Image 1 (cartoon, rainbow, N blue to C red):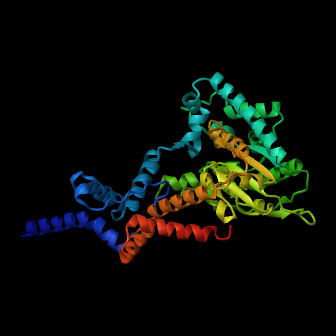
Image 2 (cartoon, rainbow, N blue to C red; image 1 turned 90 degrees about the vertical axis):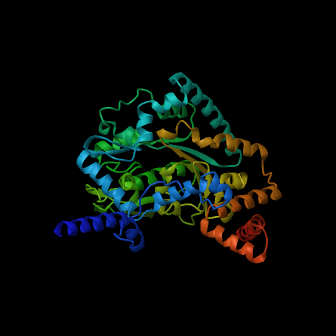
Image 3 (spheres, rainbow, N blue to C red; image 1 turned 180 degrees about the horizontal axis):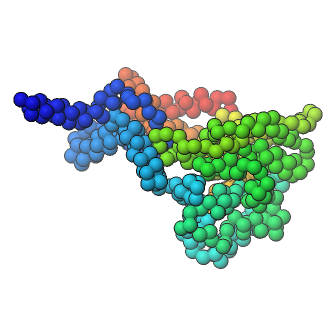
Length: 444
């Protein structure tokens, strides 16, 4: 009899373990943070004879169940914590652990070791040849911008691997040739206005009490942002030929609580517990020396994610309008009709509306020179203010249709509406997109 009770208990325990994910999913316990990082969305497949027979519906159900089973985040974080605490390993293949637990993004370690250069150009000579051609085209762009009274500035942003190569693991050996250094030399040779922050940050790291990159960050740390912002404003002041405000730190705010950008790699490790944080500044700062009767210039920025720490706050407040073309793909602006993919905005209007154009990139993006902006801008100036409103509207409407299709809740509402008014889904998608387009552009 006792043996029978033991079997029953074991059976109940086994069934409980099998049903645990379902229980966790229904009860939403334990409360756990969502997993960080990029997650490829699962494309919904509707049941039909075709999807059932070709297996796509079954595959969708399988992928959906795997991605959404109860307690998934909890189990993943527990496993990641075990791997990190016991074996000192990170399950995120895009993160490299260096000396003293320093974290690096793999794209930057591939850059510093020459892997990216060999993939992109093959040899150093090929890279140098392409760099010279790019600089010649940049000079042509500067002439076009000058004709419209627009100043131009290139910002070579520092990477953690460039400033702290001594923190890299012994398995990674920095290459002798650095493409960003080549561009800095060419800009100097051809008098192209630029700021090379690599030597500046190398100097900062020797005289500052705190590191200029955090242990778990990959962008310049928030403690350096007031210095960066002030340096940019002073350089632009000279290029524009008119005074600009400067930056003043109001509180150094030394803390173990980091700005999100200062621990972004830690976030994407998806550990159960936070890592220990050495004290770092998270300064508060503001504009100072604001000129009397100050007329704010407009700024167009073409940059990678390094600009996100400057995009809002005191630096942006020094300008009238700031258009941020992230990777030269998507435009972020206070002007509604410029909040879109670059392909769908009036580029000529956006460029010529600026008083200053600033391009910012790090070592990793030196291989994709200025994100293709030079060629795009030169072509835009050749075309001038040609803007086919009918074609533009059609492009915008098609883009909105794609936005609807990529949003499950929005798409479901459009489907229900189509059934109610007895028209096809495609027809109703078009009607909704046209309505959204009208609402977004009626003040244009």
